[in-house]
Image (tube, one colour):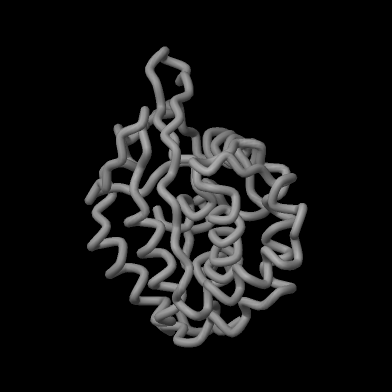
Length: 210
């Protein structure tokens, strides 16, 4: 409600929402994600000591002792035959990212235009297609332009991203966590790198930081 009533409002205290119940729900949203990160740990592995793991995660997230692991580079084929590089986070990092996305979505949902459908809760590609169809039918359009920004995720300016984030979120805990994911590094074929541009596509947090 606050995000809707005041589009200029910066949220200073969000981390108090991060408790056991909050990260447990984040885990429930993430547990079936089968792609493993650099540590090889799956959701099933993490669940063996679930309560202990989640309590420890909450403590580290809020105390500043949380450390993000590098993402694992994985390539998938695109429709044109080229390869798209994904960054697969470790499972616990996915849970942590989901917990932060749950804080950010209610804020930024009110900032998006109604014509925006990508990575938004309750929206889908089918709804986007339906919107385009209505536009063609009722406005007399004759053309549909398919545009893809080349290497969009890989070329995002992290400095600008932090500036945009600071307009709506000034909670230091949340901002430091996002910064840790941006700086976590990428493990590609045994080689670890720390890109100064971009945010790895494939992480739970990626849509919220693009």
